[in-house]
Length: 615
Image 1: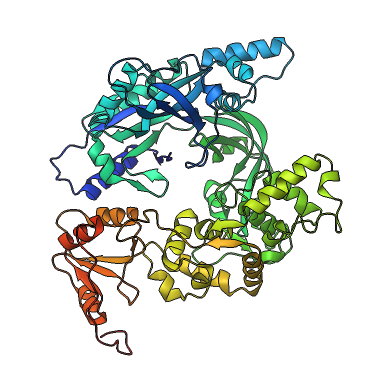
Image 2 (image 1 turned 60 degrees about the vertical axis):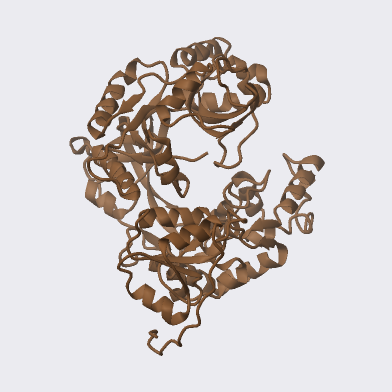
């Protein structure tokens, strides 16, 4: 299950529609019909039906692996256990949102308060916690509901348009969010957004925007996804809720990459469904631009209804004698010099691995769900192990069992632990000694290297040794990696202390070479360069198709290139391919090779490169 990109205004929505047009190479006269529906502020879940009966229900998790909550989902009053109606597919995956109605939420809190229990803070967290209860009876008490909004794996095609498929889901017994409809263009989409925002206060469930999806399913398939977000859908968020409060002081938070982020320490205030006591101030430029000072009365909002931030200062309420903010000259954690590099908005600690804040944050990142994801070893456990000196570097994690009790108290004897929980942790750590190269690279916490960049590196180099020795020039040759990211990678590898950490990890781990997503594809693992004007698809679409088949798309031609696909008016890349003996394909030949209809061509012997890089 994928997550959605956000639009915050009409221009963002227009840019989304423009991206769709450019990707599909549509004429201006061709309408992009969108399907809009309220964005429910709940917990994403997926339901699997076999022969019309609910067989499995799970949370979204990290988008690939979720939590089995089948029995809890069976307690939802409007979720069908058996599908009714005609033409129910043999296999059907339905996706949607679990939520609690506002009236039910208020009634639930009245009952809790009458029983002397603490009231729940907001509906979303109440729904999320309720769905994960170990006791289904407790889940049933939360009065959860379900709105269907999509589908996944099916045994047969469900229709040609988004709205038509949702109508079939409704016929089979699923509840759909109200006020959803097709929009013939941007004007109708904007009107629907305003309409739903206007009725928002009267709805019995929380929403935080409108989701717009390309209505044609064949276009959705062509558009595919970029990273973890579909290109064919976007969430047009509503303006964030705001509240007034007092900013008592400005503290400094040190991130895992050494960034010193100013944080507003606030008089607690309820906004956007939660009580906010801290808000990011981003950097010193934002503070100066907004004139923020300690002691100010400020307006706070939850950006995207998630991250609290200070929007503006109410200057007429400013106390006498307040002073402008002075950026820190040293890191508050380790005392190392703090610098602001040219072109950077933030100051950074120069302490590196000697800085406790960075080391701890790197360890938290290392065990995060999208990195090593060691069961039973989360941020709380890492902080405790760090504090007592049991874990100071990532490699120490894999020595916990071997060194248990030397010199620290055996884990099973520590408060909150026992023989069973300690043994479970040891087994979980052992199970993570084998990890894919892309997750390993992402876990290292290299600045600018997220999951997508880690996959690009792993796809190109396959092994740790191949990746570590690469030059700046070779890294920037990878499509999707620019000079800033490449420089951060080179600097990370060049740092001796990082090299020691990598060596220690490699001694303890079995790092699996990257496996292309489509191993049986004829072009899986091949490096492809597109040049010239293509006739059957846009360059962006060609790249997306190639990557979906497991190929690596590069931006320039080198001896590592397997194929150059040359369209009309191909220029220097075609000449370089011919000089190097790289196989050159027409667009039709490439499509035939990629589909397996034609055998891969053999490269022609080329000339030698000159000293200036030309042939």
